[in-house]
Every structure is written in structure tokens, then in C-alpha cells.
Image (cartoon, rainbow, N blue to C red; front, top):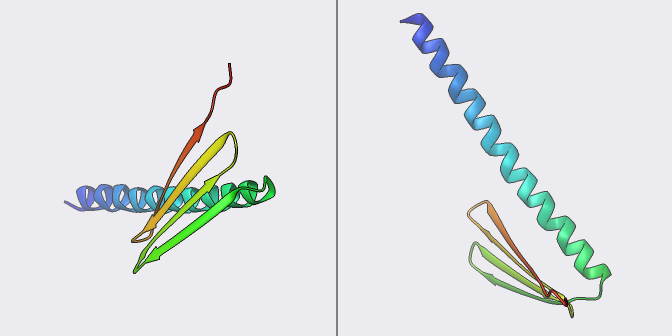
Length: 83
């Protein structure tokens, strides 16, 4: 019984650690993308509605959408292929 409890505790600890690292990484990527798009002179629109924040950034060849809600950050990047 003790071994099962320890195994469960280890799995739970690792699971929580991986989840929190992933969220931090997405947040960092979003912040870096905002800085990059600002440097490129992007048209930036920000909409805040309660706990939800949407950021839309556009240049001639790239469009980035970032959505932050309930501590989660999602990012979508679209580029034009001129080929």
C-alpha cells in the first residue's frame, strides 16, 4: 500500500510540474512574439473582456492572434507564402 501511495504521489508531482512549465513557456512565447511584432511595426489591437484578453497583430506578411483566458495562453500565427 505504501509503495502504491508513493508511486501515485510521484506521478502527481511530475504531472503538476510539467503542466505549470508548459503554461509558463506559452506565456513567454506570446510575450516574445508581441515584442517581435512591435519591432516590425505591426498594427496591434487589444481587446479585454473580463478575464479574457485578445491581441491581434498584423504586418504585410504575418498575422498573430493571442488569446489569454483563465491563466491559459493560446497563440496562432499565420504567414503569407509569396512563392
